[in-house]
Image (cartoon, rainbow, N blue to C red; front, side, top):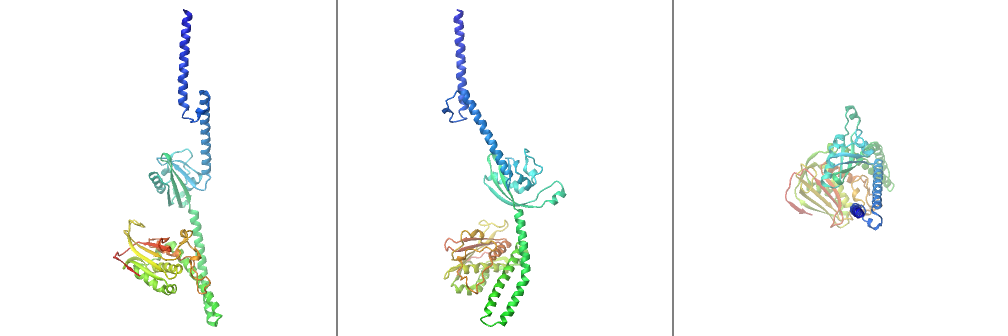
Length: 440
C-alpha cells in the first residue's frame, strides 16, 4: 500500500513538472517569436535560442549607439550649424557650430531647455513651428541679433545674416541646419568698395585720355584718323563701364535716395524709347507690336524707367532675328495674382517678348548677374564690326536694381510660342486702370 502511494505521488509530481515545462516552452515561443522572424530555422532548445536572441538585440543596440555617436561627431565637426528640438520646442542637441553661431554658451549637453529662452530669435522659433505644422522642409533668411545678459557684451556682438533650412522629424521633433552668411556678405561688400574706389580713380585718367584723343583726331587726316576713332570708342566703352558700375553700386547701397518720383504714362514712354532706337531696328527690319492699356500711369522715376526700357529694347533688337516683331504687353493684375507688398491692391505687368533664340538654360539663373555675358551665338551683329561697342554686362543688373528700387520685381524666361527671350516686370503704384486696346 505504501509502494502504491509512493508511485502515485511520483506520477503526479512528474505530470505536474511536465505540464510546467510545456507551459514554459509555450511562453518562451511567444516571447522570442517577434524578436527574429527567421528563428524558426534554427533548431536549438528554447533557452539557448533565447540567449542568442538577447545577445543579438544587445549587439544591435551597441551598433545603433555607435552609429549615433558617429553621426553626432560628424555633425559636431560640420561647417554648418545643426540643432534639434522636441515637440515642445525644447533644445535636445546642437553641434559646436550652432553653439558658436547662436552664442549658446549657457547651454550644456544633456540640458533640456526651451530654445526661445536660450536664443532670442522669433524668426527661428516661427520657422520651427511652421515646419512642424506643414510637415515640409522650410528655408528662411534673416538678420540675427545675438543677446547677452550684460549691455557691454551686447555691444561687442555684431548682427549676423543667417540662412536656416528646417526638416520635420518623427514625434514632432524638428531639425534645423544653420549657415552663417555674414562672412560672404562682408566679402561682397569689401569687393564692392574696392571696385567702387577703383572706378572713382579711373574716371579722371579716362577723361584725360579722351581729351587727348579728340585733340589728335582734329589734327590727323584720313585714313590715319580711323585709329583715333577706334581709340575713342574704346575709351567711351571704359567710361560707360565705370559710370555703370558706380551707378549700380550707388543703387544697391541706397536706391531710394536716387529716385525722383512723378506720374509716368507708360505707353507714351515706351514709344518714345522706341523712336530713339527705331533706326537700329529698321536696319534689322524689326517692328514693335504693342498690346494692352491705352493710357496707364504709375508713380515712378521717369528717367529710371526710361533707362529700363532702353536697355531691354536694345537687347531685343540685338538678339531678335531679322524680319520679326518685338512684342510688348501691358496689363494691370490684382494683388491676389502676384504679391510684392501687402498693402498693394494692383500691379502693372509688362511683358517684353522677342523672336530670337531665347536664353540658354544655363544662362537663365544668371541673366541679371553683374558682368555675366550669355552665349555670343545669340548676337546677330558681326563681331568684327569696327563701330560695334560691346556691352559691359551691367545693363540687366542695373535694370533689376531700378525695378527693385521701385518696389517691383523682374523675371527672365523663354516664351513658349516665339521661343525668344521673355522679360516680365511687375511694378506697384498703379494710378489708373482703363480698358485695354491693341496697337502695333
